[in-house]
Length: 540
Image (cartoon, rainbow, N blue to C red):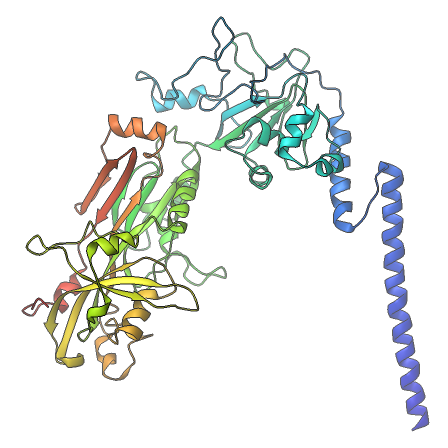
């Protein structure tokens, strides 16, 4: 027994000694590395995170100190912005007094989209063109400009001077509207959308007054890259059609039929069939049988000259696998961001139609008028009226997972069905204000006690199993949204001159209200809805 105890004590002591030795060796190695960096760079290091930053910025600083001759001087505007073009990637012309002339950003009538694309300088990435650029003044940036963007401690830590600043900081000064924060600037740098044209002995300006973008002197503007006085910062955007043709090379036909209700060069609206997922799981499992994988086959690529085209069209929201109906798709990066913000701000107005098991109760205290529903932020303009009388709505305001979940609904019609509760099924119109997980399905099953027919998750089983054979009766059949491009200044002018659109036989309309263009889409309900309500309908 004593020998066993002695063996255990010796083993424990050896393990502790070995652990301490490993920790000490790591600490010594780290200290030696820090001392080496301090001797080599002359910079104090406080932590491992600071070490990585210091090594990166010191390496970039030494690289940036190469003797680039500053290009011809560029004047600063009164607000400290370098003169640059927002659209056509050329120097803004000035009149005799030196003031900038107002330039029409829209394309000339005789200039086609392809001519406009050919006039843009090519970027470093394949399929990209330079759409905007700005030149750092020959005198650099003033310390006052730097202090407006960063704290003094941050300026000292990054060792910035008037003529040597990181690319993200230069973006904030030269493009204050596009890059309002340091996070935004760094994000675009990581996406390789920023280019840096180094100054040359002869300068970057050619005889024609345009900047000559020499690829031999252009580099990707990474986060740690430094810009010097006379350098030009350019923004490149994808102008090619992306992976539409690339996807069609592997398979000629789409994996399933996906009707396109509306599309233009920026967005599309498709009618997702039931039984299909929008996005497949990260680990796979659905192969090509997803909406995302099918979109390149059924959508037309944007026209040549459309800026910031996505490699493949991207759905901007989800619809349950068992639900059918309208799905919004973005073709360009600005459209995707704009639509995502609309969903975040609850500006997209969606309407669902469902057939439920039984007759949902309608308590008088839960009735609200159309005006009250509109005040809640729910779109009721596309709802049908009976005898010019606005419909009354039922309000459901019940939390799901401790989050607000608001739905308004009304009964449209009823029909007899022996296997249903009370031998009746009801068609209801649902308008969600929020978008919680299975919100409509749970509200109808838990609050109204009338689950959606075919909803295997919430129908309560029992006799409801007999109604599952035709799938779930829930369809997103109406949607209203702001057009992400036509609502801009450039897009409004194009919308006013050319209002042609590509749509199917379903009802699609584009309306303009106070400068904002709205897209209103409505589709017919699937055939199974009409088959379920084939009996004589009785208005409730």
